[in-house]
Length: 355
Image 1 (cartoon, rainbow, N blue to C red):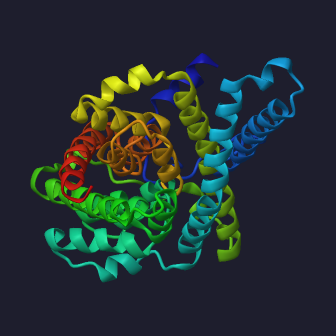
Image 2 (cartoon, rainbow, N blue to C red):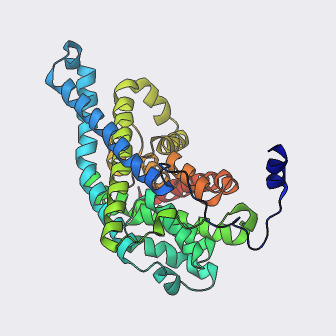
C-alpha cells in the first residue's frame, strides 16, 4: 500500500492527465460564489442588530440611555444614516444595472489606444457612470482583462466613485448653499485620478500589477436580471453596513473628542488635512454618503473636509484589501500610498484656490 502511494505521488503529469482541469470539491463544500453571497446576510444581521440597539437606546428602556452624550451620539448617527441611505440605494441600483446590462467590452472600444490619452477619457467616464468604490475594483479588473491600458483602468477606478452624479448631488445637499465645495470636490478628484493614471504610465512596472482573473460567479448561466439582483443585494448590504459603521465612528468622534483636541488641529492647517485624510482611510465610508460625514466634522477647515471626501473614495481599508486580492500585494503596497499622498496635496492646492 505504501509503494502504491509513493508511486502516485511521484507520477509526473502527462498531457492526457486530469491535472489542470477543474477539481471537483467534496460534496457539501460551498463554492466561492456561494461563500461570497453568504456574507450578505451576515452584514444585514449586523446592521439590523445595530439598528435595534439604537432604537432601544432611544426608548429610554435603560436608565443611562437618556444621558446627554448618548442622546447626541444617537442623533448624529441617525442623521448621517437617514441622509445618506437614499443616495447609497440609488448608487447601488445604477451600479448593479451597469454590471448586468452594459456590454463588458464597451469601455474598451470607446477609449483611445494610447494610454496617456486614455487616462483623461477614463476619468471623464467616471462622471457619467455612477458606482461606489466597492464596485470600482472589479470593474477596473474587467477593463484590464479586455485590453484596456492599466493606467486608464486605474484612473477610472479612482474617478468613478468620486465624481459620479450621485456623489456630487449628495455633496450639494450635505453642504447647502456652498456650490464651491461641490466644484472643489469634482476638480480635486479628477486631478488626483488623472495624476495617478499618468504616474502609472511613466513609473508603473508590470511586476507591480497582477492582472485579475475572471470572478467565479460570472461563469454561471444566470440571466441579466438575476445578476442585477445579486449585484444590488451584495453592494447595498455591504455598503450599507459600512455606512452604519462609519456613521457610528463619526458620531463617537463628535461626542468623545473634546473641543480642546480639535483646537490643536485647527491651529495647524496642514495637520487638519492630514488628520482627516487618515480618518477617511480608517472610516471607509461609502462615497455616496461620505459628504454627510464630512459636513458633520464642523471643527475642521473646509480644505480638510475636502481632503476627507477626496481621499475616502480612493483610499480606505476595504479598498486596500480589495486591491490586494485583485491586483496583488505589490500593487497594494504602492498604489494606495501614492494615491493618498497625491490626493492630500491636490486637496490642499484646490482648497486654497476655491475654498
